[in-house]
Amino acid sequence: MTLSRRKFMIQSALLGCSAAASPLLTPVTLAAAPGDNRLVVIILRGAMDGLDVVQPYGDANFARFRPTLGVGEAAGAQDLDGYFALNAGLAPLMPLWRAKELGFVQAVSTPYRDKRSHFDGQDLLETGSNSRDAAPQNGRSGWLNRALALLPDARAETAFSVGRARILLLDGEMPFSAWSPDSDLSLSTQSQALLARIYANDPLFAESVEMAIELADKTEPMQQGGRAGQARALAGFAAARLNEETRIASFSIGGWDTHGGQKRSLPRALGQLSEAILALKSGLGRNWQQTTVLAITEFGRTVAENGTGGTDHGTGGAMVMAGGAINGGKVFGQWPGLGEADLYQGRDLEPTADVRRYLGWALRDLFGMQASALGSTVFPGLDMGDNVGIIA
Image (cartoon, rainbow, N blue to C red):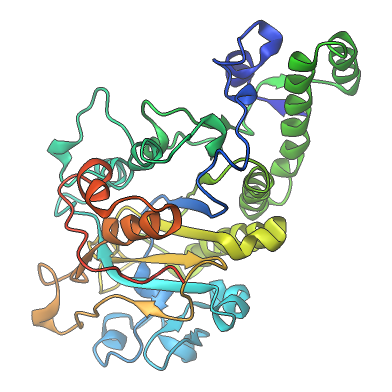
């Protein structure tokens, strides 16, 4: 059993924190949350190659750009709609596609352009800014945290950040809870029993002890099963919180930087994503039908493979969507084509839409936020346009 010492000290009433200051003790009833819809945002760190994940094998130009990576059904991909095919690494999710609980958006990106830095790209993805200069280094906040400010009666338990990596998109003034499996504090069975006995007669502190023990019980699977097991455990913990007061959860999955050996490395990353989505579906049970999962990445990768069997940093990419609440079984987005004149700077997939627009309409349809506020407060400078229709 392990629990982050820093978070334990900050969030646990065992050290004298008041109920108002401790996210673990902030009461949020289902009535206080904005309805029963759930949102899970997964950051895919490293720039996922959306062209390999949702392969446009119906585009006659695609095969010539990927002579060794392979294209379409010949490479084990499964047909989606006669034009796009799903990488074999996500084959476990095909039942969700057939049930219209899985979907994709092609040719999207943040407003970030040209410099192709993971750090800057992830900052814009998580702050929701329209340019690097618009994301100040001090006091900046994430778009998901700003969205919480628009939710009536949003409290700390409304949103939950899960995992080892710091997630900027939930940083900001609005309270949120966090849990990390990476820790240096172990509580033995005897220690658990001692704490429970000491605070048995104090309901407030006893609740904190129970939470600490619950978090620790969720930690053990993180040590087993490698990265896929870790992604499964993170998603399982998030699902448990979403079955209670939490309505918004986020975590990240790494391993998407595929400069070389993409045929080996990408399936590993896709396996983590598959495990996470399936764990959410299993853990949420009937609440899956009111859940939207959005997996987003900082930018796409080059259309042409490089000399090491990989792809380099690009621009346009893809977003993965799952959940019973989505309008699934579709590949959304305006496809720009892969002719020489169609490519961005002659090398990248041309983005035809701002990924923030899809995020904004998801927030609008799930939680009833005003489109005007989303285009000004949550995603500054964003033209929301017409509803993109990704929520059923």
